[in-house]
Image (cartoon, rainbow, N blue to C red; front, side, top):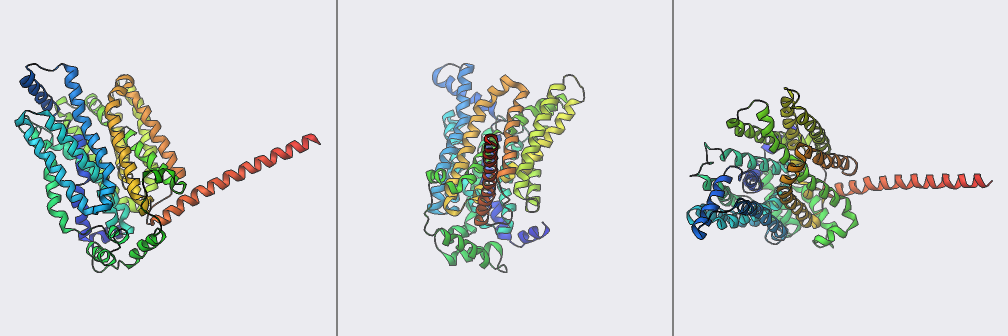
Length: 504
């Protein structure tokens, strides 16, 4: 691990690429997940004021709730649209150019947010949320592709986790900037919602200083000289890029007769069936693992533990800070531990935490010290979520699929992410209303199933090329298939022998 950190420190341009691509990349996605919590009352007041001025009447509670639901869900719709076009844009114009143009979308959204209060138009907020969603949908796909393709094989796991680290940082900044001492006030809430424009502008000014993805230049543009120049800039002039270029060319040679596949090809090709199942299971569970439920019940748990109501927002900041710090720690341990271990250990420990949390929440009305146990379990759950699934899942499509399947694989992963986020936003309140804290048992099932799936069906990806990982998938499941066939054959032979002996 020390060697990996030392190697990263010797590559200042790669470190800059991590921060520059992250601040305008997945940071935006995380920021907009949490930022609406603080100004929700002010936005609803704007909606009511707009209708009062236009139609001379205030909205009924159900009408206000309906418009609020639209404002929230517009982000997911924009995100889904951005995801559907991200792979095509990244292939046609390059990773770097796509990220640059994507910032213009976020800046337009920020301008609409700033003007919405003056114009008394909640529709401008809706359009801005769509634009923010498009920006985040493109960022989730292209930022991940770009940073993984810029990193050397040995650092790919460490660099890949930074994608999730910036999501956590975005969530935390959404919480931090939203407190009343910063921008969470009636006068400044529009600046809070327009903060994404600042992050986008920062990336727009600094990203041109970085090279294009070396892998994109070599495999999709056949620019060997451009690839070598980009690698030397990213990794330092002393590091020889030759071996990794040879590995890229070996993959390119093996895929020379294969065109870039579409979405239907991904679902119909049996050779990538287990890779596709891995993406389906891990990305569905990422949204349905219960992290939103844990954050929701944390307020009740902290209050029951004696934290004053006015201080609950600072306790919530503590959970966000725990997620960020654990995600950063994950960067330091992933190369030593391996992604497979972090995934199955994370899911199984999250499942155990959810089961115990259900029990402690049930008992906290009967046992005075039980809320403290619930607090410990909440932080334990966040620790294993941040150090496992949150950090490992996002870059998986770029590591387990060959170049020809990466665009549709990232598209499937991001579609699952956005649809899951939308469904959780719409159905989660109903689940909590009917099941209360027993809703954790639903999420327990998803976490436990995913942990078992990873244990039996996903190979380790640490320090391996895509072709090596593909062979590991084949070897793992061929071995299991042959073992099952042998057992079936043995049982069949035993049945025949028994039948013969019976007849004799």
